[in-house]
Length: 176
Image (cartoon, rainbow, N blue to C red; front, side):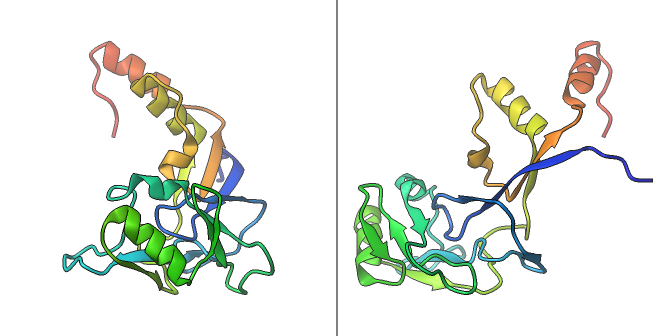
């Protein structure tokens, strides 16, 4: 028996690791997630550790870069350019973009493309509006869904957070 828990209200794709994402009207999904999602990342050339990919943890302003498709995009859904925080459009695979990001980081980087998108844990990331709202409530500020970088946002028809919160306040242990 199917139980309706909510409705999909938004789809997102993040072509380049830690850069801004894009809202989609529709998306093709396959074994390795949404087409064009999480397929590109800057590799830190000086890093010999186990995680060479540049992320917003190392360069927070990376989230202000925006992948673009100013003309016909690639057939695999990937962008062709990136808009910098200053508004300059640079070719995705150009030396100018790698030099700009490398200058901001303080060490050289190069763009890397992996067909299966191994930069993150899951193929598709799903979150509910109730979860986003509860995190915002607990943090004492409005939560922006984009901070969670989901592919699918579901408008919850109900929330179990209130029931769990009330049970915990009464001393009952939450159900797992």
